[in-house]
Image (cartoon, rainbow, N blue to C red; front, top):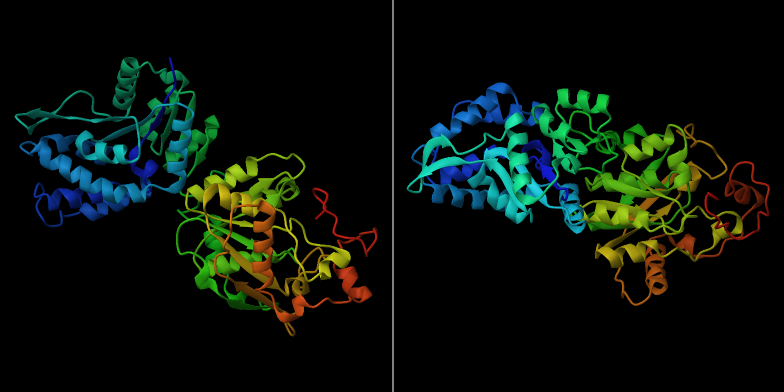
Length: 472
């Protein structure tokens, strides 16, 4: 026997309720009155916020009786119309997970209380293998007001899943299940791999006590949400220039950042402040960004937890593993923005003052794997606000704040013939965004050299950049 993956629909595969879309399409089909049902919007909104309730599910069960006399073919057509809308509302990471289960040879099944005839077209559009849903009784092509088989909710959902599994050679006890609702506890408890997705308050408590994974499909799995908002979004809302009087921000070219869909952001590296500068530019474009960062940052107490909560992708340069690129590719497949600093670490010593930027080929390889556009960002002046030899930024420079110049360029045209050649194109595109002074070889003063080195550095200050893993 094989295992399978069972997915709830509302507030799981979808962020909220499918009901509003189904209601709209049934009205357009002439099945429901073309007017607002009193309290309908409130009920749907309440469901979006807190999930299933006993009254709402009792009302759902009575829908079979309310549908008596409806032409089944018309309802099926309404389901197809709804699927065209809802398929785009399924979060990117849900689609990535569906694809991963399929690639591993595992049947992917929608298990939902919603009417079978309405949800089947959506399951088909998502490439799912089967649908376990509430079926309405039928006579002569019209619903007869009864439920045919299980009411697929609570214990009834588990019973329906087990019946389907028995017919299809699936071992439920070895399977995966994903749901938001405490009322799906019977199914979640029956499988080997339960996942609480966007869990309602009671399911969140149970998941915590039982140590089940709890996450959301519209953000990376390690990213929490509070009140429906991920931490990075909250920070972006607060990141107004007035709150940073110790720096001046000079930003241009934000319109080059795609408003939606995947993108790879590449930037030069001059300071520990650079990720914040890139994040500020992405905030202007209303896009969260997922940084690839070295493992030492993720392993650091407190800081590592913060970086993970912001959606960072851990890179262990010494391992030679392609896992970070795979995680980045998943994020891009989900429509996210991924940021890479191809230099890998802040250049030190004389290398910091070299006009020509040199980078690793990770960004070029990732673009080749995913087809995502590469958007270059040129940073200048971040080292004045937070030099490498300082443990913290200079928050006292309020009277004479340094200017941080952030320039976003158009997508880099890659040829795809050579990673080295494409990496050179990427670095050239970044250099073209820097001010004229960046392109002139500069003989640093001893103080400038000192500021370009990590605190306590005792090596040769005239040495080339140290490329060892973890040297930053």
